[in-house]
Each structure stands twice: as structure tokens, then as C-alpha cells.
Amino acid sequence: MTNPDARLSRRAFLGTLGAGAAVGLAGCVGGDEGSTGDGRADWQHPYFSPEGTGYNPRATGPASKPSESWGIEVNGLELARPVVFDETVYLATSERLRAFSAADGTELWSVESDTQSGFRSSVTVDSERVYVGHVGARTGVLAYTHDGEEAWHAPTESSVWAPVVRPEPDRDCLYTADTAGNLYRVRASDGTVEWREEVFGPVRSLAARNDTVVAGTEGGEVVTFRDEGVERGLTGSWRTKHPGGVQSLAVAGSGDVFAGFFGAGVARLSGGLRAGAVAWHQEDPSPHGSLVVGPRRIFSTDGAGLDAFDKRSGSPSWAAGDDFFAPPAGAGDTVFVSDTSDDGGVVAYDTGGGVGLDDIRVGGVRWRYDLAGRALTGPTPAGDALFVVESGGDDGPRRLVALRAG
Image 1 (cartoon, rainbow, N blue to C red):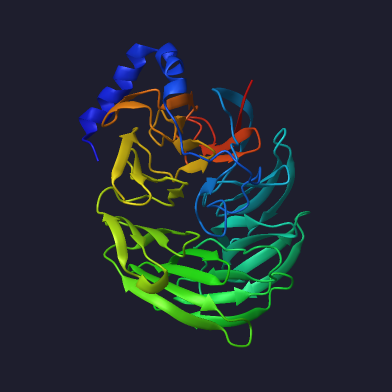
Image 2 (cartoon, rainbow, N blue to C red; image 1 turned 45 degrees about the horizontal axis):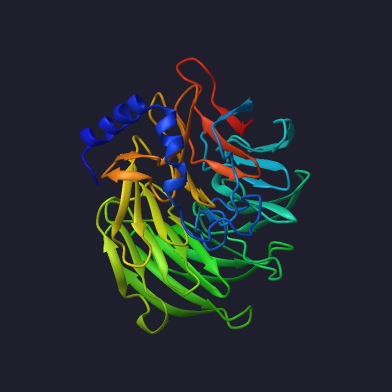
């Protein structure tokens, strides 16, 4: 990580160059190879996929500097970035779960929690239902239809903070975990709790790939299981302890796990025969939220900027930015980041980082859009748009904003 003075000089330096220099270098800076292929146009999980990669191989979101397409006031404490499915944007705050038209921001429906309860997790969506964690009169996971009607309630022992993970549609199950240290398999069609496994510590992050389930605890443990089905339950694969609570998890096709820890950096943990062994560990920076795991690089935000690492070796690739506390999002050869400073906005970077030294770089910034206030969530690229919640400035209300180019 470079020093704060270097980050400040970067903004001033790029400002003197103007947009023309960045455009002139556009053909010279390559992103992640093979990263603009097939993929969904939406963003159904808070970290894009059950694997938690925060990365869509399809190039979605605005390709050039956008303008505001629409903005709508939202109240309550935002829990995570919006998610998008089938032209609908879903956002949970502590008080309400709401659904909006992605095209024009029209509110399609909302569900308000009672005064003794509240929503607690980000939203996950599939072709049938909308899932969200809840605490209070009915602690656990609540499922709603796409029309906003409650479908079922799956009880948990305590609050659900980690995202609900919905594996591929051909499996009638989802995974959830609570702050009492329990991991659950729930039947997606009717909310039946099919098994519960204790993992010893509040679960803050959860990811799954095929029949592998990975949980990260507040105490710094990463625990990996194999789901043997309803009758047999879970078989422990490996468990490893690290300093710092687990902030993010992503499972690669190889079975390796990428993990971010509070105050303890980013690590690649091996699957297979070397299960749980540290393949590489970068002690700094430490992510504030989820990672982006692309084809060649890992991206992390730590409150001081965006850092890119080589996926295979963990060596630093490039760094840039300002007050980036919210988790980034990747799509194709672009990584989108929310600037959470008072004069913040959303910045789109080429995943190759442009050319330059440390965070003094040219050609890495594709565009920057300044919001009325600071960004409050990570950005969500979906279709031709990007969605983010912003503070509205000194006097304005919090708003969910849609940005589109052209």
C-alpha cells in the first residue's frame, strides 16, 4: 500500500492530464484476458455468485462516463449493495425490503419490519424468491415471492448477518448462518431446515461451490465442509485459524479459497491435497468487505484505496484511489469502486491498472461520476446500468441511484 500523500497526488496529477490522455492510452492498457465472455447480465447475490467472487465475466455496467438515470429516496441503515434480477433492483435496509424497476426506479413493492424486528443481511434472489436475514419476532431467513408476498420463514438461533447463499437452481437448498455460530441447510422451496452444524463463532461470511460450503467467523476461522446431502449432513474438510475476523470469502474452481481478514490482509488458502495451507498471504491492505476475484487479479478496498494482486502469486499489481471503504465489483475488464468520502462518487478502472508507478497512473481510470453525497454501498453493475446508495449530501436524503451512459 502506498502512502496517503501519494494517493492525494494521484488525483491532482490525473486532473492536470485531462480526459484526453486517458483516452489516448485506452488501447495500450489491457484488462484481464478472457474476462468479457458469457455471463448473466444481472447481479443476484451480494457478491455476484454463490462462490462469492464479486466478479461477473460479462462486461456489464456503463462502459463510458454515465449520468443519473433515476434516483429514489431510501430510509434506514443500508445493509449492503443492491442486487438485481430480471429488471428489478432489490434493496434491504434495517427497516424495509424494497423492489424497484431497474428501468425507471418505480417502486414495485415494499415490506416494512415491525418496531421490535429488523432486516439484518443483504438480499439474495433466484428465479422464484427473494431471501433476506431477519431478527426479532421471527429471527432467521425470510423468503418472499417476486410480488412481495411472504413465502416462508426458516428459523435460526440468532441473527443472520452473512449473506444467504443460494447454489445453482437445480439444487433445492440454500445455506445460511447465524451469529451464534450455526450453519444451516434450508430447503429453498418451503423453508424447511434440513440440518444444522455448529462452527464455533459468529459467522460473518459464507460462500459455496457445488457441494463445498465455506464459512468465515468473527474469530478468524475459515471452515470448509462437504455437503453429503439431507440424510448425511456435512463432512468437515478443513479448518484454519487466522488473526483478524473474516471479512470476505470466495471459492475458486480449483477449490482454493480467497479470504480477507479484518486488520490481517488477504490470503489464498489451498484446496485439494494441501487443504487449508496458505498459498500466499498479503498482510496489507485489509479489505473492508468482499473481494473481487477475477481471472488474473484479486481486488481489495481498505479505506485508503483499491489494491490489485496477482491471483496466482499474490504479488501486488497496482494500487489507486482514495476513500474506498465499500467493497468493489468487477465486470468484464472493469472494476467499479465507490468513493465513500464526503465528495465521493463511483470510479470505473481498467483491471489492468493503466501505466505508471505505484498509484500515480495514467489510463487506468475509465470514468468517474461524482455523486451528490458520499457513496454508502459498494456499486452494482447490471445490464447497462450501475446502482449505488448515496448519502444525498449535507441536506439531501439517502438515495438509491441508477447510472447509465449515453
